[in-house]
Amino acid sequence: MASLFKSTYNTRSLLPESFRFIRSDVPNCIMEKEVQWLIEHNITTVVDLRDDNERERKKCALIDNELFQYHCMPVTGGNAVPKSADDVSKSYIKMVDEQMDLIINTILKSETNVLYFCNAGK
Image (cartoon, helix red, strand yellow):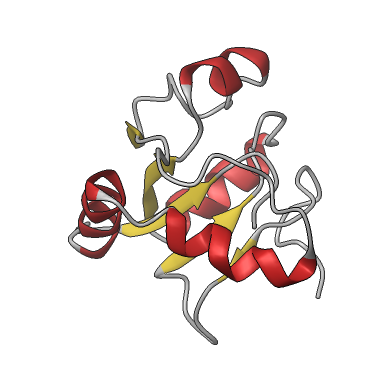
């Protein structure tokens, strides 16, 4: 499956035939026509799951765009990279903490469709 955008590697809809939840790698070089596509599809809530250092290293092009409601909500749990394929699911379980509750509630309660991302879009 290809990315929804030429400017990203891993932008995809979470639900079939719906643009309610879009996950992605960081849209740091998003093109104007892709920004317009987001607006046309009512995807105007943006949730950045990266920490301050990650955001500083690779700035999201949407962060200062007034057409979007931008939330900086870093994932705080499970900061270690899995050592094996068997450890991947365990690393995701470790991510579940109070911050993850806030992130999920922000995404689910959004009045518009949501684009959320980390660095790689996993």
